[in-house]
Length: 391
Image 1 (spheres, helix red, strand yellow):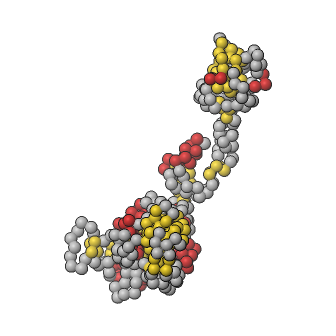
Image 2: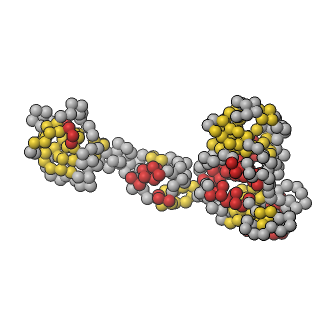
Image 3: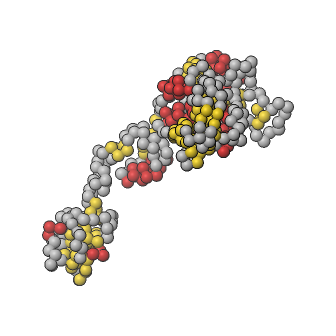
């Protein structure tokens, strides 16, 4: 049996994003760039007025005489007339005619006929002008590999004329839930049967990461059936199985995985819940075998599978924090324990009902509190390690 830190390292060492895809810019929200983005143009692409006002040559300006206005320039047009020492009426976003370098706001002038007198004591050469390339220059790296695309990022790239980006592809994930006792919600419970919920937990946890599993299959505790389901699922990037991961007579997942050629990396971790946790590989496929208890499934998913998915997508989905325990707590040492918790400000409460089959407390939790193997008594006010599961 290995430690939690050893399990994390082994999974991390085997996890990597190995596929890219090109997406239309508008479809790239929340995706991580797999390559640097280089600007194809200067922005602004020309010297541009920042306000509605009047453009003129600062060095030609005679404060006593004023500036004669030769015409006007609207955004989206170019002034082609002769300027000389004159100025132009100009609007926000319009290009400055050649030879003009300063803009005075329209509120700061007196207009008489075709002449303006500037009444702005603070104006300097270059005032109210956005210089060509002042935001970015052609050839600049504007967003780096790994950047998570936001609405602002998409707007920014659109302003550079970019219409598509290369991002890390979302992993192909398949789910196999095992158990003869399982009945789908809405069905009729027979003797010894329970409603299946693990696929709902995993699918919704993946949905929160904008990932839809390729397939979800429910399989009875029959080794041939499990082997058949695994063989059909080994075209995925990640395969997640729940149930049958321990060492009982009907815990058939480890032996089924071995029959399918999956190479075991480890089986069993010194933790609670989820001690029978299994991890293996098949070529580049990551295979996770989770216990069947619902709280163990979600705890192992958040602690191990979510970071592995982040390696594929180039994203970090979680926050690990140090928080203040809001109350005294005592437990039996020996295993690292992931405790369902509820945060308030910079403090965290360990909830009741911590058993691995209980989901009533998990439904209120927003964090997992990690207590190290030998930490048995924690006093109110001490710091504990917290994984935020809802961010």
